[in-house]
Image (cartoon, rainbow, N blue to C red; front, top):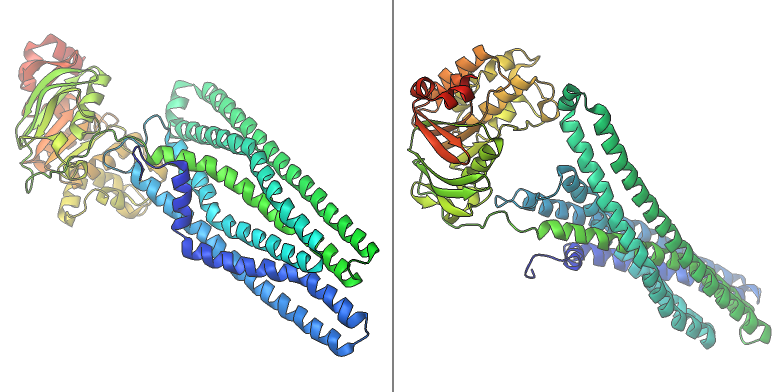
Length: 566
């Protein structure tokens, strides 16, 4: 793979290479089909000269038998070739989707930078399908070229001028077709960009629908999507007009070329240079050539769109990682001692913080940006510009991101649920943990109470992103998932903001027990949660401004009291 990641051309080549057996098989069968198609008018012409003109019944029967065999072979080859070619396209697109999924889910991150989730979905569906279609249309293109070659050879046997006309006329037509496809390629790329952006905006609006309704901002959201959708429609119409112009221009060129062949054949027949059967064969071949040229026009258009989509896929696959990948793993089972040394990242301004193994620490900040950047640093979704974060004395930059996240779990405030049962959502992060740990997590988060309210209990299938639950219920299930993972280090960001105070108090009391002996960090301003911590660290202006027990800070720090109790 070249430095800087794959290019659009490499993506296209890999799509074909990965299906080369299917592509070769489909191409050979397609070429056989087209060759047989080209021989049909030749056989008819021969039958006219040797059977009809002479009145020979046995000769006519022999040529009819040959025609029957030709049609049997060409029909069988066509069906088989089409089936294999379509399978090649589907497999190629599926392989691309797997590669895109692996890149997006890469622990080093970076693929989603400056891209909406809907845009990534569009790339993984529409663009992958268009690139995969190259493996489908390539056999059609090879079959069309084979048909042109067979037709040219047949015409050479009938008449050298006719054969040379086809052989010399095909290369300029192919070159013109490639040149005509350039605008289509550019407009297809613009169309896909606009469609992906519209899909991303739509996904954002749907995910934030409740918030929009609560703010009364539906009209502004609809206006935003309408503008985006209209832009996408305009781009799609431009691409459609470009494709129509592309196909129309190629058909016009092809029509002129075929007419020239027919007129030349008629002229030669009038002069007696070719027989009546040869004229029938020549005219039949000229009409037949329309099919291969249409196939080439179709293949050319598909290649133009695939090249545009391949560049978009290559951009995702070549996205720089958000963090450099280390190669070390935490020694055995991580003890969970986390330390930040003069960490500077975004809003963080030289934070020094020591989180002993097995401790339960609260972190209070009134600045959402500080909380966000602290989560990035602890999850190693971004490396500090200065200082370092350590786990058991080892800098996180030296640890493999995937192995690190098996020891450190950062659960963000806006965690999403999956469209599966409540129990499967909780078990999603609990690979390797027993049923007892899952039950304990359900109890500690009071998600077991949520399950009892559902029709099928914990086996009830939740709607997409858990929308069939209330905000508080979703938070409790998400908290259960984080607890069930049973990581040595767990960082929770505002896990109970939508939960009522009585339930929150029960969660706080149970949280300390379920996390006993493991390091836990609570980034929150909830008095109930902070009351069960060993100590509380206050961040203000991106630095540590206070450190102590919750009760002592409430009694002696007015700023802390205002942040937590105000």
